[in-house]
Amino acid sequence: MTTDKALSSEHHIEIATGIILSVLTCGIYNIYWNYRQFLAMNALLGREEFKFVPWLLLSLVTCGLYHIYYEYKMGAELYGWLKDHGRVANSNLPVMGLVLSCFGLTVIADAVYQHEINKLS
Image (cartoon, rainbow, N blue to C red; front, top):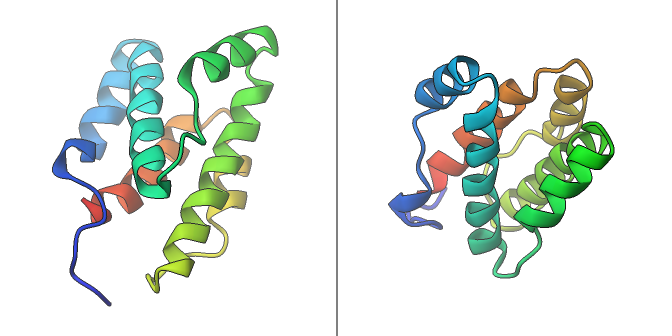
């Protein structure tokens, strides 16, 4: 396993803080947390794959269904990047995000993804 950092430390978010603030703000902080994860994923992938405003609008219009899809997509992209770069990765990462999101546990899916992102920063 390589020790080089794939992301800068600006993409690091404390997971406990993210969960607590998301609960205390009734999900408002989770929107910001997703924005920060989009920035991290775009930096990691080297392209603008995750776009905040379209995600937010489509998530609102579809009553959260689009967000469930995006949780799966983020897991798939993260897993693909980790695998392609020789990093240890759980192949169930996309499905985990999908299932957690379907049960309304998107904060937990975000925490799992943030854990992987934090290991890279």
